[in-house]
Length: 326
Ligand code: TRP
Ligand code: SF4
Image (cartoon, rainbow, N blue to C red; front, side, top):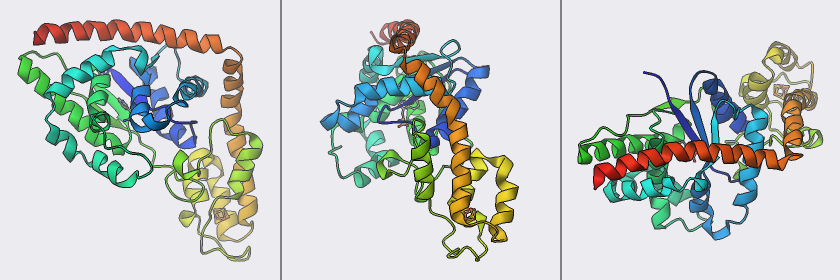
């Protein structure tokens, strides 16, 4: 069966290298072969940041610029902002009516977030319903393939269950079964060896200047067993090698292994060389970013175009849904 792709990303801050090797690079591959819809899911951002939501607007535009600069092609794919297509909320309401509370309360991602995020009050009706809105995002377009990270699998399982339940209740076959497309790349670790994340301040952003990249590379933790230049290093126990050289400069991994295990170069040099590779890799993305930022009305046009295309599909689905219910 032919694939119809939908994915979304919350506009919660600048995109970093982890997004590039995770979601974005897989989206770029997929758009070569399949119809794709990519949404900037601002309502999902709001669910988590309702206490301080004013930054979301700026992040939306920044995200659109980053996506396009990386190679998401508005000629091929539909790019739009979730809140500009009101049918997302309409379908979420319908799904909210048929989703048993137990399904949501049992969701492991939900339980983990309530436990771990203590700086914000997430004990809200909306946040419990996060995966209901996510199901609406996907099913509004009858997408059957969803590129996501592993942490999102429980949400996709709920999407499938909600689709089946709706079909069952209405005795119609409106919504398809959907599958996850798991992003291949292992999770990229940040400068400090923890998961790369804005909240840990350990990320290299796509928009970071060359000097910022160099300064950040200096901070990267290396093989903890290598205390002195004269000690041979263990590249496979080093985040600089495992997370960065392997992914962003694979043509250099033999050299690195050689100079590291034979103690020919120190970590400072090794990281400085890596920094130059990253600067080179980011340069074309940043040039494209500058080009786009010089024409903000072009970004607005692209998002308007996306809103129209997405809206037309969404209205059709909602009409079917109402027809099935009432
Ligand atoms: N929950 C996803 C995340 O945090 C974002 C998201 C919202 C999404 N709606 C979606 C992803 C629909 C895939 C499909 O990463
Ligand atoms: Fe890591 Fe490079 Fe140092 Fe080896 S030389 S430990 S690969 S930073």
